[in-house]
Length: 564
Image 1 (cartoon, rainbow, N blue to C red):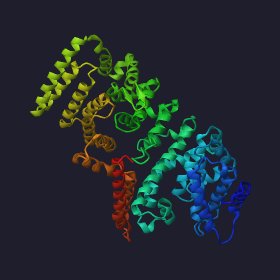
Image 2: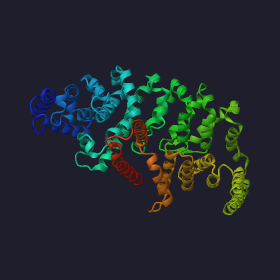
Image 3: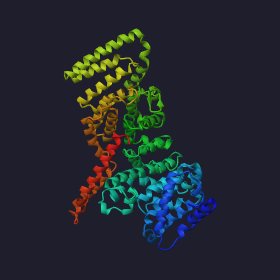
């Protein structure tokens, strides 16, 4: 690399790439140093064409193949690190450049990457293998090369997405420090981290492994490939819980794949038959999640398709009608208008949707047109008077009477008075919470949040919906609203009630919560059949497992509050 003559330097590098996989002797530990250096270069300069043009892909493919097929070599010195670095280098260089992806495929990287994907070493190598294969499958010119192994790739990606969290939990997180594989620990922390960093990286890597597996499946689904495998009912239900936690902020995870499937006839047909999936989309559409618009899009796609419309009509319409006054959502404009048009087009089938829902859509579009400016001001005064009466009843503890008065105020309040309507809907939501009517509280607080400017920023409504979701045991939705509520709070100190709510739901939404529950259930069943474990290993490891979990939750909580 230091050779001043460019031609000599390139010749030397090419020779190095060509000879490295065939090297023999006792100096194999030098390979790890070379691979580590190449990894740093690939990460920092992924668009530099020098190494790809000199044979780095063929070298990396050969090293992976050697690591998989020569176990003695793999376990010599530090060679165990080499397959990980090699696959990571392939993925980094193929991330942005299609021409590099073409060179990689021509150099034979796909078979060794598939071996890693199948778990022939460990989940750590699976993570970088699925990342690299995802990049190769994303380009038109290299997709078919990956698709030559379509059945194998899709089945492995499906299995990874569904099981990787449990694998990482069992094989790493739940273990004592001295039981964890040393090279896994070193890769995660670069050899300088502590237990807290290890646990944090394990959570991050597990989330990435799941999200990158879903991305690889996306590459096939968007081309209508292997839909018979991807649309299995069990997997579609699993997708509802693959939300990435609060780790992979840039990935829509499971719901992203659901949306891709909703663009295909086969995908819509299978999704419409699963109430769990439809309800997940509905809950997402009425949430503070960054991917809220995906839930709305999917419901609209299902309603527009005459073959799936009647299967989802009642459920989808009940969610969407709360969003008809939503003007914009991120870079999406006229969201409520789009929703209204779809619902109004269902008018001939109003008995399926519910006359009240459709009539509400129609009324909201026509009410203002009949009012003069003078009449509008008179109505504003009337609305204010009724609202004051409702507030007075509420303060006296007459919650049901107050609720009726708030509904009366909404009945006469013009559509253009968005701020007034927002406050009334929010007050109605509070009444419903006190009356233990969680569903109505969610509906009214959602309508209030649609009227806020920008959307989803009315603090009281966020907190009230968080409480309502908490009443229904919906930890994820409650947590997201509570986090948004805190973000909207200008105080330096976080309100105690919000901190308590977050603390309550952090454990339930922990990335490994389901995996931990399954392990504990299995352990209890084994203990019931065979008595206590002779070595007491499970009981001995529980304190360490709890400590690891609490460290990761605390770190995630701090990151959320500081916007990291």
